[in-house]
Image (cartoon, rainbow, N blue to C red; front, side, top):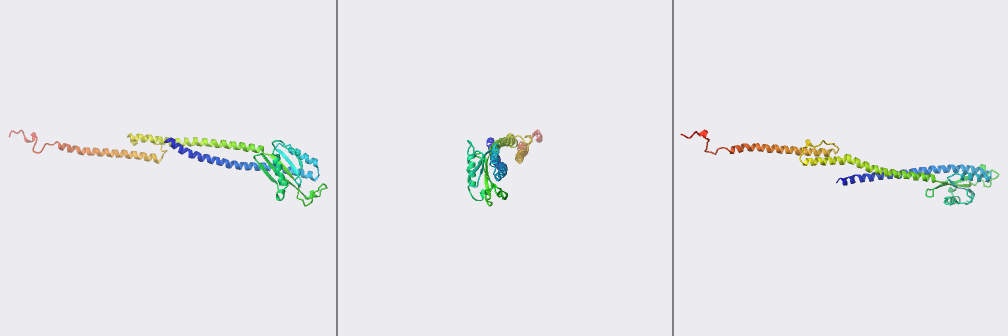
Length: 299
């Protein structure tokens, strides 16, 4: 009985608590992932904006060596795997790799994504766009290099004054550090879920044993004593953990004791009434008198 009661008491609570914790961990992980990804994107944006400002000045001066040096220096950063500058015709003018792709890199995917943007038309060309790929572990940014009035007046300038865009910067940034942090966070949350599951089972079992099962066992023992005839006053003192159930049980035992006392009192009263009748039944039959009453019989 108690095994079935324990199972019915612990299993639903364990499922409910563990389910709530797992749902909360997934919900929290999704928020943390979004926040950390947004922070990584902001970091990439800051780097891309710095590169755009530097390359913009070099483009105004028509300093191709400076452009190559800028790209080479940026490419020395451990996280940067792809950096390219496209012109308005979607052709890569300057590149860190000059067409060489390292084995196992995501450069090809970054190039394909950037090519689709710079070769397109519309508002997307004049906006900074991002692509976050957690499967391949990279964050790509495509940022336009905008034309300025002072740029169109430069001697080296060969763009029309009404052209808004000089070119595009494509930057492929490794998100390995971000993915490692997210994987560690996921592992910690899974371990936390198992810990909550273990603590829930052990804690609920301990609380039920102390506050329910032991009092029930104690009440069962008191019932066995009451069935054996022990009076209510001789039962062990109640710990009051079962509340009204224990009070009702003792009230029933007390009422039983009182009923037995009344029954014994009634039986005793009937026995007292029967004894005088039996004394009258032992009297001398009518017509016979004791000798002391009638005399010696000489007369």
